[in-house]
Image (tube, rainbow, N blue to C red):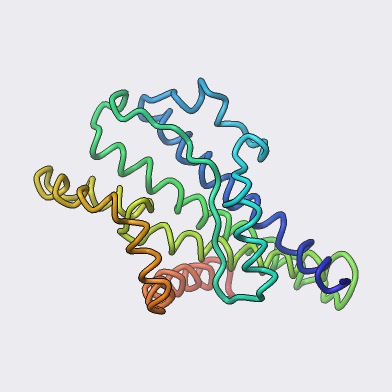
Length: 216
């Protein structure tokens, strides 16, 4: 039980912040591009309670943590975006979509700064050791969430980005796979292909942390 309590204490805040701010970032980007739907519905708040999905934000990450899985993900309630309010719907929707993974990369960098501060203390117990463990969890989870969401499979953000980058006719063709996206994701997971597909993106994120902060 002490180990379980420690694990939950280390992972709770990183997971909650990563999932919540990911969705808020979509809303911020949408508002900047002309759609205030999320703002009018009170979804630009940093209050996690406004974004928590009982299954995606709590149950699913908790199960993966308790299983001590090397793979961990989750989701919050999607922020509503009205495409018709965007001036350039396809391009702007791609920008709204990429804002989520970009926020996770930014949070990974933020946790990296905190990790450097913790390591500088050289603590082997107490508060700074807790900060070190939490920062490592924050870096890992945010890079994993970023990589997962950049995959071009509906309903992930990467699919919206790819659709917006393709010529309209090709984008419309690509959008037709949306109803089958979850089946594709589950199939990739059970086939053991989801991790290998995410790994290059995670490695790229780690390389950025090394370049900016000086460590992996």
